[in-house]
Image (cartoon, rainbow, N blue to C red; front, side):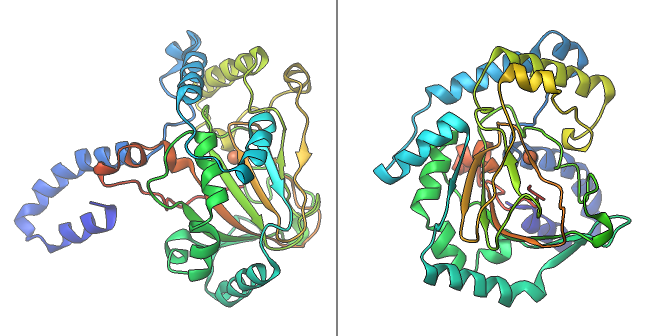
Length: 331
Ligand SMILES: [Fe+2]
């Protein structure tokens, strides 16, 4: 049962049952969350993290991933998988044929007036999104993304999880207001270096317009997906800081690695610039961020998030999950 059917069921019951429903709601929500939520970036509390819980957790998760089979990897996917293993990211220019790209672009423009607009506090900047649930009905999205063997094979091979449900596929546009150009945190804190979670997690960005260093290019630190002593040291420090300072969601107040930590890890920023029709596949276990906007050119993308592969709902489909279309801002 998903959240919508649960709400409908509640509404259909007579009033005397409301107390029972309220009481029953909490454990049901708890179970649904358990099924639909992927493991968090941090777990436990300060005491266990001081004892190195995050380091142990990272090592266990990485070892378990390495021991799982990769699934089918065709010869075409193989060459991209090599880059994903090595660098944590791959960029594929001219990904679709001209005809397919223009059908996608036309759909984006046709749907554009119906996008949800998310204004940014105290500014005229905004981002616009047409989310996955609605897009699931689109034949263009279905053909180009939901039935895309290459993307699925790579997402499966990197996370080493079988795909039992389609991912969220969303149209996104970021628009930076003139007065915000060049400022930090124009939309959120995703312009700060961070990694998403301590396990392999795939995100896909397809550029619908040209993206360069000036209009919010996704930026990755190649090789930061690989394990090293320096990375474990940073993870330890971050987990302790997280629980000590109660920063909440790390992207909203996390500690970027310092110059010396980056040097120790041997990683450098690489803005993933590209012309329209470029596909970027990233393992967001590695460090990344969105470049600030230095002009008012929009950034328009199609966005896929495979984080749900790690949920119990995807791993055990008989549980009736997963909730793959969870709303998210992405990078
Ligand atoms: Fe991120």
